Amino acid sequence: MSYRKLSEEQIIDYLNKDSCSPEIENLIELSAGRSREAFGSRGYVFAQWGLNCEPCSLDCDFCSLGEKNFSFDSKFSLTVEEAVEGLNRTDISMVSDIFMMCTADYPLDRIYAIGREVRKRIPRETRLVANIGDFDRDQARALKESGYTGFYHIVRLREGQDTKGDPAVREETIRFGMEEGLELYYCIEPIGPEHSSQEIAREILRAQELQPKVMAVMRRICIPGTSLYKHGEIDDADLTKIAAVTNLAVLPERAMNVHEPCLDSMRAGINQLYAELGINPRDTCENTEENRGFSVTGAWNYLEENGYSKS
Image 1 (spheres, rainbow, N blue to C red):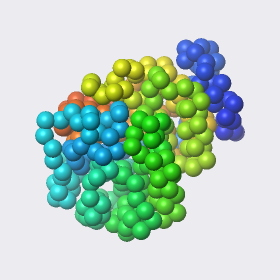
Image 2: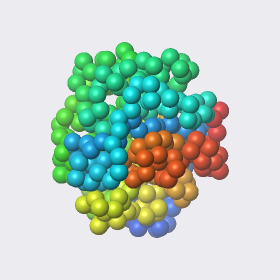
Image 3: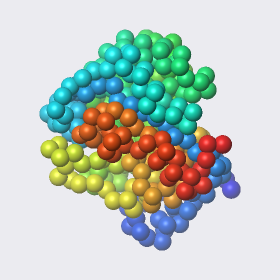
Image 4: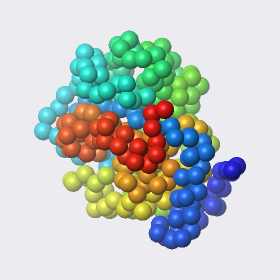
């Protein structure tokens, strides 16, 4: 079957429909079928670990690491050696992509050094991804030279309003990374009940234009004490609908992700999940694997239940 990308009008129309309506059920089935055609039975688990627990100057209203929201008892910033030690905390043979995540203020020189050391210790085919703050063209080139193959960078929903990020700078960073040969990983996030269909559609269309090989949608997790806590979270049915719409609008080549996952959302043709270690902006536990974070085994259990495997 040939799949044509959803238009702006179709995206908004589907986002406005009741998430439990027959039309959305049909859309979810269509999204699942598209994934089977595009991905076969190939599933992926990506591993991501947080490198520092410090108040972040971007001060996002939804983040447990924002300056005004900082929700941890202690502060720390991993050294190169400590970051590399994280490789011993997960089964590298069961993950295809490794993400290094930090706040916007973590030193880039240390990110480069971590990349060089991690690259020595992982298989050549394993992708290494930087989930970091904004950077310029020279820094994008340095990331690639340090062993990174990709970067996670997005224009968040209500960027510049709920964050201190500048949408134009975020866009520029994406352009620099892609032009220097780094693979872009993209996501529609952090989705909350207060976001309109038009807002979500605008970011889906941005992703459609960027055409990442790996696409995702993520709901905002309510952190007590943050200013956005009052809005609550979208439910599983809404998350599943948005995942299906996004999958059919962007048509990613390699993988479609949902975060944080629920079994219902897997019906939309989700073939990639994250295992997370260490500090996390959606948690208040210093080791998210002991709280919110999925383990590699837990992620694969979800995928295998839905017919996706490592080969």
